[in-house]
Length: 375
Image (cartoon, rainbow, N blue to C red; front, side, top):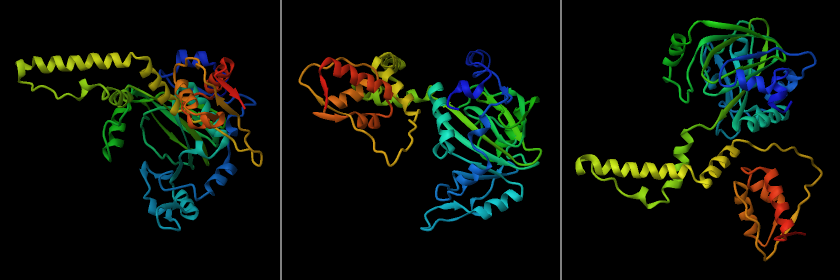
């Protein structure tokens, strides 16, 4: 399972985008023969947990009655004393006492999870996180809450009862309050229960960002994985525009005092800068910058094939005019042409924010023009 279409089957992508994406929840019961629960199971999850050197108190968390368990209650110091790592016996003791286990960043550890995360990342131009939740009978790790991203939940083992509330926070990017006041705020603002969904192995649940929900393992042990979907939004413009704008002397000039000309001088100065910002946003180069920032959210998945070695494809730059390239791939090709010889696989590895397909197509085009020759 590598794509959105496979994840939400038998619902079509067209139906999903027309009726549910960023609009409303969608429960997709497992269809006969579906392999969605085959992402991993208890055996694979235990194997991943046994890789104790990977986990820290931040990537493996424990929750009890909606509160984070103090890491000292389930962790020990690593061999060098630099950080805490979960201790299997202490973790299982906390589970026996009614805590839930949350394992973060599974997209970096499990190949099937990584493949699906990569497919979702490409589909939504988004950063994808994959977290696994393990709970036992009668345990609700979190009270009513919403997330700052879209969620696809896949039930792997056991069953879990999800309650979806009526209210939704519109396009949240930050939590409304902080600290101990947050659970109470959630409770007061979630509204009445709108729908109950009993998730069984292979079921998928989509929740748009900001939708209030909670979940309870009613019978036995439950294991599910959530894929968080977090595309870019307007805040990124401030970061990207700052870098571009500061190259223009107009943005380095001091502001006139507000008292000057009754505030008109400052108003005119701000208006002038606003026009320049609008012009920056309209530039093709700025579009490329945003596109490359999106691509950085899409990590390339690779699989080892040792003892086989990678075959390297070498090119030599020729002293004739190169074709014109536009878009993010132009950055990769500028690097390639700045060298007398280059290795294609190195360019692909260095420019991981540019599509590999685009780089290969650009190199083929350059070779066809005679400005590159393959060695």
